[in-house]
Length: 358
Image 1 (spheres, rainbow, N blue to C red):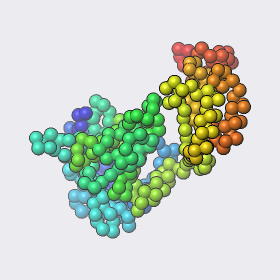
Image 2 (tube, rainbow, N blue to C red):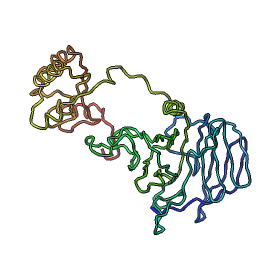
Image 3 (cartoon, rainbow, N blue to C red):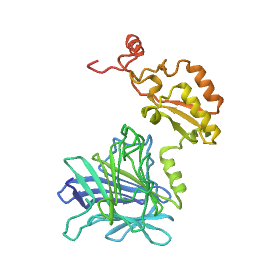
Image 4 (cartoon, rainbow, N blue to C red):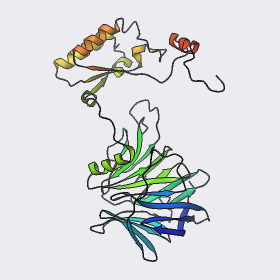
């Protein structure tokens, strides 16, 4: 990564607590810059113009906020947060409004003893079309969030890539459901408003800074402040909308027998019912039985057809599972195997999505 750093704000317009300007880089590049509050204690910063890859159906506009300029720094704030934007050298700092304590601030330099920077600072890479922001990392700061992840709950010291993968399990940092919402133990969150890939280096490269990289030319993020994580999430849901309530049983324990099946203990209908009986007898909590692709057989999935060898009577099997108070989840893939009957039927009836080549 060859980062050209942002250095100065030019052509500034500051009105009603909203800052708009041109952010220039050390190489002469120029980007539209805007900053302003959207909710109490929470603000939005956009660098690079209009965001074509926003996560939000409707992004909130800037609200009128108190602000002033002392000749070097713009101060924008409310009773919760104070956003400071320094003109030159360009920098961002956030304070608690009541105590004036610095909550977070950008970090343009993080050199080791040889002078080598351990973090990229704040700027962009033209060749890779990405934007990056580095922040000061406090000694006692910890990080959480970023969606479904199979690593330690505290993400400090990790590099997390927010990009959906078929992870083929839960043994690595790759995951299926990523959310670019980073929560700090210092009671703030950063939400990267993009559907592009975002990489968070959370103190892996340096003990003194962390940074996130957005793999697109526009950097659009929200700083969300709250008295608790619960309060922060409420602010976040004001942006994205609240998730629908889920059935209570779905919050229970889901159990898969796939590992046993792959290890040689054939998990056909009879054996699975035996496992459920043993679980109930031993008081083992079990709310959902998760059947991985083998319910369709060892080969040929996704066919959406029960394997007749393992499950000769699916209706009777499901009835017995439900009698034990257990729900069933069937693993499905979003495609049809070309060697299955259902594929031929779908192809004949025109149910399949086509592109230019077929």
